[in-house]
Image (cartoon, rainbow, N blue to C red; front, side):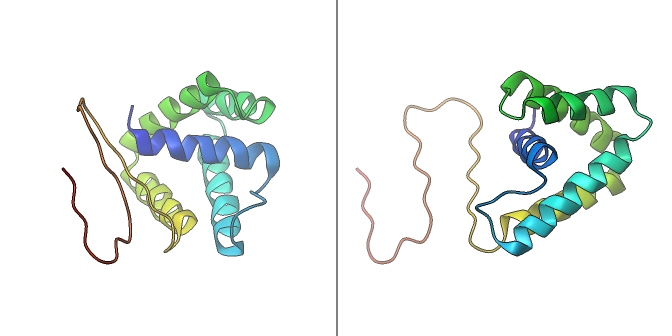
Length: 124
């Protein structure tokens, strides 16, 4: 499972349940609204997609339901590159200029992720 798709699915689940986020900017709220609308339209007539959206709406905090939505979303995105591009573009709008997303895949003893380091940095 692509972690970005899982994150997007979580945002969609929350957006479906609450309409939009309360702690994000107006631009991000608009992007979430459009993202949810786009997914709802694409999943219209898609029984698994509609079911996953309904389950996410009923319980947006449920990790298994979010994962189910992410799995279906990933499948549809894999089958429809134009839809995938739309979702990625909308997700970029949600993130805005001030959001940092760090993804790590694999195993490591130590992982350091950061943003905006001003001045010197020494890691031993």
